[in-house]
Amino acid sequence: KRVPVLQLVHDVPAGSQLSAGDLRTVELSVDPSLQVVPAAERSAMVGQYAVVRMVAGALLQRQHLQPGALLAAGSAVVAVVVPPGAIPIGLVEQSNVQLVFPVENGTPDAAPPPPVTGRVVGLPSTVDPVTGELSVSVEVPEASAATVAAAPKVRLVLLSPGASTP
Image: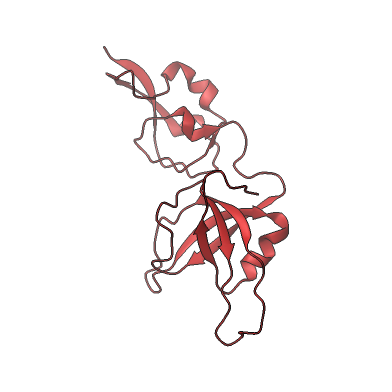
């Protein structure tokens, strides 16, 4: 028995609002354990926000969507450049992280800013071909955004899922 379900037409980045053009209907023979969205619910899915990056061709799943915008009020998103090999194992979109500012070798007496807690909202899709660095988008409290953006070096510490975020 085939049923009509929703499939993504193209990639939808985390935080993007789903539009009618992002979806198409496909008919599949579906196992009941597969969590898919019936095509009849298309209008209810349009306007939702992607919680994680969703790739073209994937079947739409409710747990990847939320009704409100990804960025909370009073927060900002900062791109954090991470050197090769410095992304913690297990880091995914929506991970709770702490941003730590290492002391520069030439300035051992200078106190670094205190760590900032944040939430990953975007993972790198490409590596800088020259430096090998990656850019991770992190939601932080708006008051801390300038500190994070101005820091010459930032390290990511993966926190437990229950840790508080901005």
